[in-house]
Amino acid sequence: MIQLNYRDSKPIYEQIKDGFRKLIITNSLSANEKLPSVRELASGLAINPNTIQKAYRDLESEGYTYTVAGKGTFVAEHREILNTRQHELLEEFDEVVEELCFLSVSRSDLITRIEHAAEGGEKV
Image 1 (tube, one colour):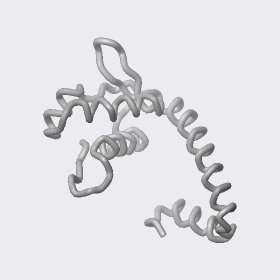
Image 2 (cartoon, one colour):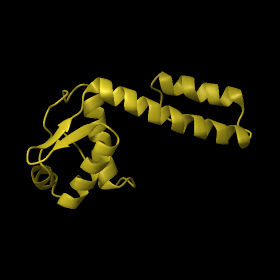
Image 3 (spheres, helix red, strand yellow):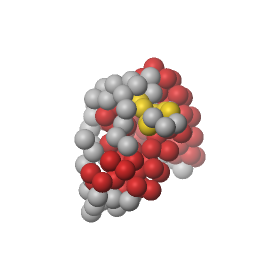
């Protein structure tokens, strides 16, 4: 399900979040599907449960999941995820583009990067 790279400089909880985001966005996890419990996943990955809890908390605050007290954490409706996350990311994108323009990055360089990313290319 989730694979961790202990040599990666990215924190473990970020790797967990990225893994679940990918599973959710690609519909490998369906809406309203229950995620493994914190203890279950921590045991399976041999890491501290607090790390899993942080990842789950962040996923919920980003709109990918929701929690039902006493029942667990579940995948949010995909329509809800798309609306919320797209809005958040587009706001961040606007801020980053504005700053890059201020730093004199050319419009053509920005467009080239966007096109490259949209084609699924690796980072430039």
